Image 1 (cartoon, rainbow, N blue to C red):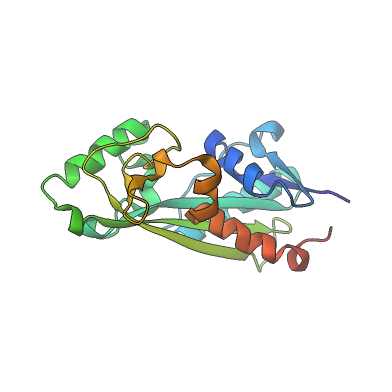
Image 2: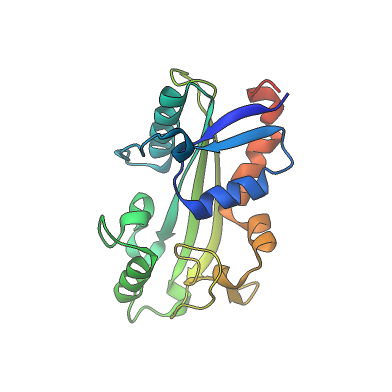
Length: 201
């Protein structure tokens, strides 16, 4: 039996990554937009809080188990910013280009060895909306913020997220390679490993 799970995201790039990484699991991911579920207001101060808010909203309005993600980039030279505000770093109506532009401006003059950063992903699974014990899966992806954008794949801060060991940015990686080593890929594989314990299939 395939279990239906609502995916608490309207981000087309994230939805594609979720479906690709979990393609072999016996679950059917239903993006919340297909059920006319509006996005929840992200009022939390941490990735975990926001992921729980989104999962609870999607589960409440769908009557289904929910899977959510809250993620962002933490830059050490900026004291961990933009963090939970990564998606709206340059303002509520911003886009990836404006966010990346602002990040480069704020790091202007900072040498590459001091531009360490990490992507952080928090995945939350809720079996029902009033569950008091959400399952949480965290992972990070270490790198540096490059001096300029490179690559046209991926999304978000990927063109700036430089991987010294691979000598390229996340936006230069093939999709399968990125999913194998990214923060979201690692967190979703932790979810997959625990799947038989948290959902009836």
